Length: 204
Ligand SMILES: [Zn+2]
Image (tube, rainbow, N blue to C red; front, side, top):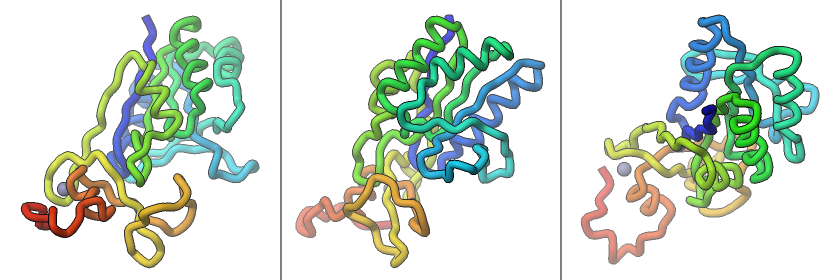
């Protein structure tokens, strides 16, 4: 039985590295993999690729809103037998596209490995992540740590001024930086904890 997997984490946890390594493991054994990456924030004419901080890189197809991923994968599979599908930036999938990927596992018998963020900088689920958390066969958390050493599950966005963004669009392309934090330090940075409740909440 092929399965739909969701590897989720916060920013800078090494998800793309894991994806590329897993794809490489298939290819090393002579098997064919098909890689997707979100095209939402890339130019139409750009070539898709997935790169990681440790230097691994691979070409990838882009997915955009409204694409029928089941049809695309089915057509690809007919011309070249595909052993595994990988999806990076899976948080940007639409709910319907997650169902299409589930059908790739269920009806084409091809495992689908999705990698993405669970929540945005305001602590809200992304559309793709919500659907994947709901229907994926296997959920796997990719761990990274906060500055305090606890597990980081949240992310704050720093604007060009270096200050933590409290509101704004879910995704901003540009000079913004992201820092992964544990929930406790995320709430402090977001100003959710009133000053009188800060006892015991000292920053390291
Ligand atoms: Zn922390």
